Length: 183
Image (cartoon, rainbow, N blue to C red; front, side, top):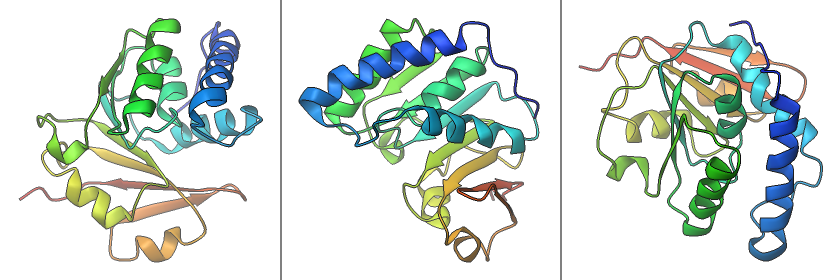
């Protein structure tokens, strides 16, 4: 998918960065000091998605990587961020309001405890194995849904039993999984 950044993208990223720095002083959400590589990593994954999603889910959203940056770009996609950690969910809620991200919905729970709905795209960054993630997302996807997983060096081994494509940019493995049977 071609990635087009909105005109106010850099401004939103800077606002996000200021919010993160402020929260990090008290809550230690992440140890990243330079947000630029995180933003680039987050949006790079969109290049591999095959179609524009109407509904997307991010599992284990943490401090908002990649979901917040993807929501800034895919403004017409309804983004559901699942984050059970109260401090991280509070941060995500603050960011959503502060950046006026009307397309973001925060779920303060584990995805497996949520009310099921279908998503066109499910993302996750270094949360758990691909097979386990697919398992806990049961009920949220169908055969047309895609999973975009941000993985480390063991990505190919992790998805060897799945119909997945692994894209490597020299730093990160982006795993795209689609066409899962939901029988």
